Image (cartoon, rainbow, N blue to C red; front, side):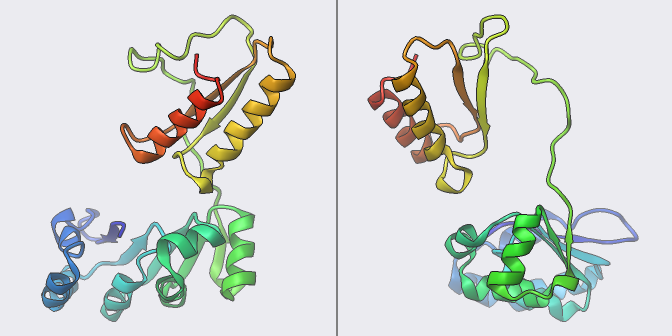
Length: 212
């Protein structure tokens, strides 16, 4: 369950995380506290409810009774929606939203063709990050040891199937099999320390003989 933010036009301050953390309790406790939480949120009179994922349909089903516009930003494609949200929650999210922001044309196409979302409801707003040079720190200098003018093949994102980290490793294996003496470097940025995904990825890298 991801955090849903409620924006109050008067204070221009997101609702306290404490209220939203209560929505992350175990299901029995969540059900008992839900009515009280909704009353607390109603008292805030949020101008807009902004949700950053397709996975919060269950919560939005409660919050829409407040009457505030619900804007939902969707970064997920079809498989991720089924994996992380489930069809019921996703459909709740789509039907209850006043406006949907798709992070790409591919996301918009998926919503329209596979989930039958009204295309007039969707605006494409590409995801982005600040355009600045990578800041090297002591934490990453150990593996960012490049030669001058060295060609880098890069990937970025969490280490899971939806980000294509498995394909990245497969391509690296095929490349070095064909060009064993190449100085091209494959570098992936992004993982959670000691996560099972990272452990699996490092295992596959070592097994492929690609760990420097």
